[in-house]
Length: 110
Image 1 (spheres, one colour):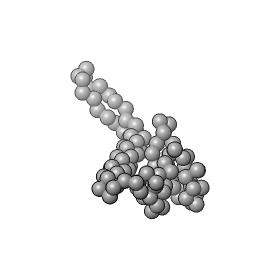
Image 2 (cartoon, helix red, strand yellow):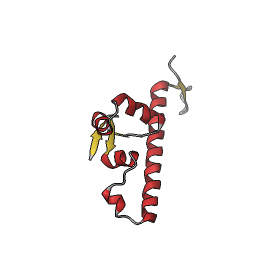
Image 3 (cartoon, helix red, strand yellow):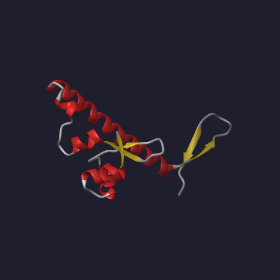
Image 4 (cartoon, one colour):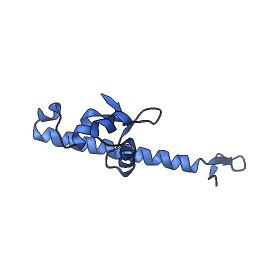
């Protein structure tokens, strides 16, 4: 089940601003909705708190390790995607054709 940032903050006992900072810093990376809003899973919050979910407890240790590695990869990709979104918002370049050729130049707004 996905939780909003406000629900996750209440669940953890912190303010939404704290979760936003943790997301930016990579400490607790949020998933994103198609509209860019932060979402968290209950399992993710339990893992953050250092608790194992019922499903994880039933897994053999080697599968728990694989699950943790996959989770870390997903969080890393999520953080990278967020960085790319922030960068693209900053650049918001204007494409200018070069003399009818197919090449274009990106000029950043100042």
